[in-house]
Length: 335
Ligand code: BTN
Image (cartoon, rainbow, N blue to C red; front, side):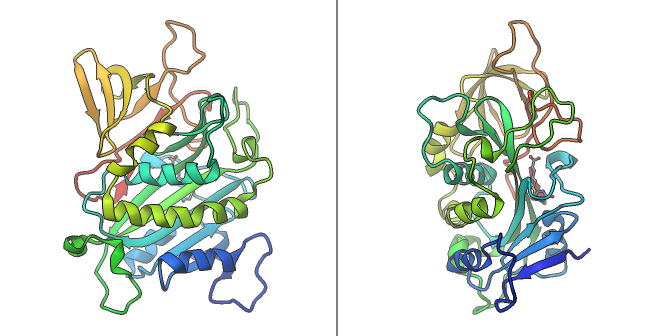
């Protein structure tokens, strides 16, 4: 499937839709990924699907692909990602990468986005702190989901010298392990119809009323590129203290998909969730994690659901994060 193009950066002379600062986005991209291109599409099935399709065809140039509308947006674990034009920012960044260790990439991405969109943590933590719900979600501290991240990888043949792929993107010894990674990000920008939900999902305008999707993308792109490059060079470990400042699970009771429960104790150097259970400290790399809503009465069971993703029947009061974020080796979906 090909999308309906609004603008490609190579058409610099044609009139760009004023809403998308294509030239500035292109400049930010090129500063980090020489030879990269920016495309804004009016409509496509899914920006992740499209970049993965291209990668399978051998088209692995660095690309920022933005869609004003996705007709088949995807979330983690086969879920749908629902969004309506103008109300959301939906984009994918595709690039070749070869970090020594892929563990924690989605945490690094989420952290970068959260810090860009809310550089200063609000003095009072609740409810407007923009934080992270391990491993892939952006939440407000009132337990409403604001956005999500879907990372997928495809095998990648290292192009020849001079191909525009900077060697800084991978650890020297790991060049052979380079993969094309597609980092898909969906962010609710404007309040959306609650559609019968008890509580609508969070949106960026809850914390930044003036911000629209183009402004948000411009704000977050350069730091995201820097963050991904820093991750490739140094891994997740140096980000741990900053992640802790945004960690919305820390100290909270969580339920794992195997039925175990415990108290979340932050993340390890590899980004694995640390959970203190009655049987001891568990390092969780692949599990579904439900959290008890903050305001719930004692004895009430944690509720499953999701924010803006989920197979439509999302109950945004409740939170279920799913995960398989920390593969020992790269796999096609880093969920
Ligand atoms: C999740 O919370 O489950 C992850 C949601 C990721 C949604 C984004 S929107 C842009 C990109 N294209 C997709 O189809 N999905 C990601």
